[in-house]
Image (cartoon, rainbow, N blue to C red):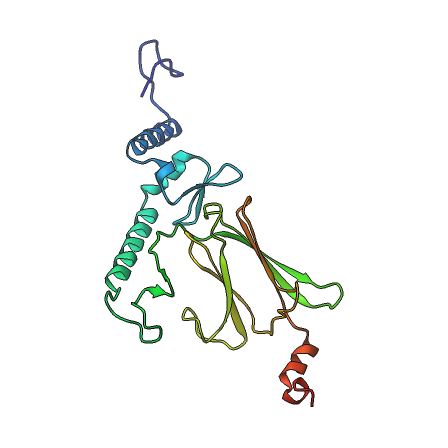
Length: 241
C-alpha cells in the first residue's frame, strides 16, 4: 500500500492509514485475489439485473458491484449454501434407481413417455409479480402472474399447472387452498398458494403467454362467480333436471 504524500506526513515518509482506507485497500486486494480464481461470467449463480446491480441466485442476495459479489462468494453464507446444494444433488444422484421399471408406465424409472428426465443445475428462483384482476363485464375476480426468466432458452416455453392441496408434499394439506406451479429450466419450480375456488377455463378467461424477447411468462386465471360455483355444485341443475 502506498503511504506517500499522506496528509500529516513528511515527504518520503509514511503516515498512518485510516481505518476506512485500510478497509478499502483490503477489499480491493480480496477482489483482485478472487478475480484470479473466479470468473463471474462463468458462475451459474451470477446475474446482472436491469438496474446494474449483481445478484446471487443461490443465496438471493443483491450486490452493488462485482467486488461485493466476489467477497460474498468467499463468505460463510455462500459456501454453506454451496455445500448444501452439493449434498442434495449427491443424495438425489445416489437415490436414482437405475434399471428399475415403473409399474404404472412400463418404462424405466426416470423416463416419461419418450423424453428422459435431465439432471440440470438449478440457478435459483425467477422474479415474479402477482396482480389482482377483475372482468369488467362479468365482475369475475382473477389473478395475473408475471414471471421473469432471463436465462431460460427461448425455444423452451415455461410450463404451468394447478394442483390441489392433497397432491403436493411441501405443506400440510388445507382444502381451502390450491397451488399454481410454474416450471422453466434452469430455474427452480415456483408455486403460488391460491384460494381453492373453481377456475373458469372458458374462452380467453384463462391463458398463458411466453414473451421470447423479454423472457417473461404471463399466466392469468379467473375464478367462477359464487353463483356459478353453486350452480355447478348442484347435480340436478348441472344435468338440466
